[in-house]
Length: 407
Image (cartoon, rainbow, N blue to C red; front, side, top):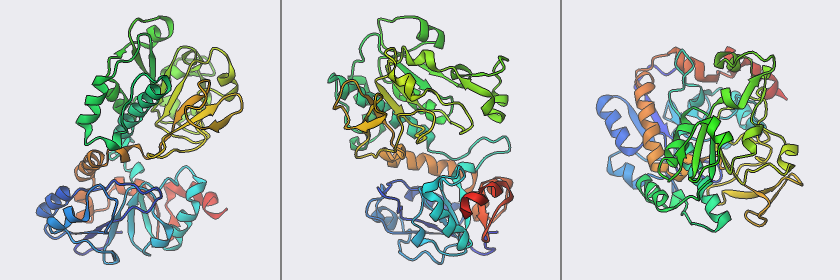
């Protein structure tokens, strides 16, 4: 439970390496919150690399201090350095433990040992399961842009500067309008959620034209084209019955991949789907070795390592976003070294390339959906659904993590 007193909220310095520049709340948003809730107190941990500087917070009279032990609620973005946890506090961040991610198990153990209440942004949902706060849209925007960047470098046809070197989103769009994608180029986007929506927004600023899945597979074009597909296109039921999204969500293991035809006609694949580990993989390494496998660039926005796309063998970074994947060996090589290799982009913190834009949008989502409950210290079903552990114990919803935690 939250402390029943004047609530104090601290904004953490990001500690994951490489450091992330995003924030959950911008300076102006904190000012607005303080005006609306004068009894609430907000504190910032100092940071040399945050996209909003310490000076911007100080100018608006928001206290900046190292020690946040006076705060009841601590909010960050990415995973937190386990050595910095304050026992007994409530933490909000993207924890990446609910899928039993091995690389975060030690952090998770520390959280439980220190009797921290962990609330994961990813699981803040409405009753129907819809997420209320996410960076996915921005991941799609940057991921699609990086896919185009990779294509330009591979073909030496055009150069787009990295998103993080652009002043803002307007400059990103302006750069896209300057390039000319070649006739007949085929770009495929998988997914129908926020990330895919962001990817399609990026592609709408190019000269590519959207076409149907049927035309994408069967026709040749004298213009560049883009196609967006969902699981009803890239999977099918093993028993031959018609696709049902509700059935797919509840029974992903009863489906098989129907993606193979797309591997024969696609040039740039932008993977912006949600993938359940029980779902079928899109294709395998043997498929990638076949002469009719046409993908030259895979921009894996979803970035499920060793998941549905065999070339996603590690996450890349904003500073070094690309690597070459040799399908004959199944191993990584230097990016753009061999034209027969597939260029892979698998940055796992894509919104960090547009940190001010994405942070402001994320903060708006927090304010619209949970800040009133947090500040007024109301327990809600939404907060309960997102609470992974509390008082040294896993919550009932996440009890399945016991073996992962104790191994």
